[in-house]
Amino acid sequence: METIGLGLYFEDMPEGRQFKTLGRSVTEADIVNFVGATGMGEVLFINLDYLENETQFDDRLVPGALVLANAEGQVMQYSLQKTGIAFLGMEMNIEGPVFAGDTLYVEVEVVESRRSKSQPERALVRTRNTVKNQDGKTVMVYTPLRMMKCRDAG
Image (cartoon, rainbow, N blue to C red; front, side, top):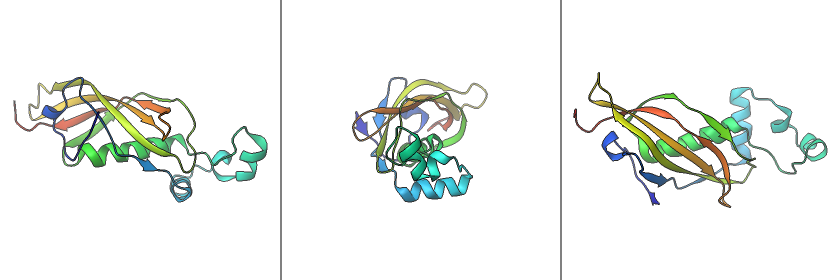
């Protein structure tokens, strides 16, 4: 599976195309900043004593929304710069926990790719994005539908 660069157009995203991002570690600072910015003050994310004494988790948990944001940032940075137009929707499943210090990367597979009939300079692309940790364990799967630029008007 290749690691890709910037700005893939619709023509670069045929059904079956696969690539993966480089990866990014989730830090304690990421969690604190995310929880503060979003107001997600869930005890699981802000109270280490609670985690240690009231749950089966020993390490600081990462909110699923932060896992998604991390994954989307990687996909955006490495493939959608200047070519993504809109995020239209998705289905998402969380498959396992993510902890502070985990390194996440995204394996992307194009599962739908079609040019817009009404606007031939645009297309719809759906991918299956599998988020994995440093051990190769799947922690999230989501299937975003995006509007993308076309290199030509078809």
